[in-house]
Length: 282
Ligand code: NAI
View (tube, rainbow, N blue to C red):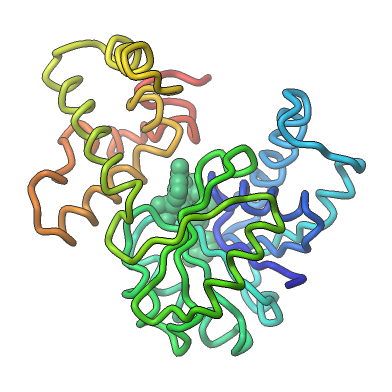
């Protein structure tokens, strides 16, 4: 694989583009506007400097050389010759659906589609395309350049060949993977979304403050981050959309999103990505 198409230049897409460029892959990063792409470029540059500073990634070349491997564009046609697309658009079924219909027409037949989603069924995404055997879940962890593990999800029709190719590729960019069968939320988010939602319920019922809730998780259970800090890192909108998908998919009230999440999204309190969530980042 030489050229990787990355769709969506938000929290995850920028991290995915960054990780591949570091390992000398050419990346075409697509989003819907120049403003978003300019911001993405700034974010990747800043992340590269920061990770180098904290010595978490070795950049053995000038940063502009690594950055030079990433092409920033709004043009989907430029994805035509990619060997792999990793899609990281907003966690919304309607948005993702339009993207897959489009790339299925544009991309060459052998191109694999990697779906980065928190809760959406990979089988359902595969069914939107004429290549369900080459559609696979690639649930990267945030922040992507620092997190080693990728939860790889086998859709109903995902072929063994596709799984082997993705396993090898992940090894090549210094990541490990665990392959799981398709199920909304997979393994990680099926459990994590519940404890984040329960922490939000406790905050909403004024059982404790955000700081107290997070401190309890960190000190009692040794978590690096508390559930509300994690929600801010992931994005409050992504948490809400994921819980809504899980609620619908399993038809189970245990996934019903707390009303506070809805209010925060309506109030544009989206967490770290726009500066304010349960905590303030500006
Ligand atoms: P985000 O909200 O930070 O970024 C989404 C990006 O998609 C935005 O830049 C938006 O402009 C772009 N976009 C929307 N429609 C588009 C279209 N039609 N074509 C191209 N770009 C489009 O979201 P984030 O957090 O990066 O999430 C992306 C995906 O990764 C979601 O499915 C999410 O569930 C999943 N994910 C998120 C994690 C997290 O910690 N934030 C962790 C693992 C997976």
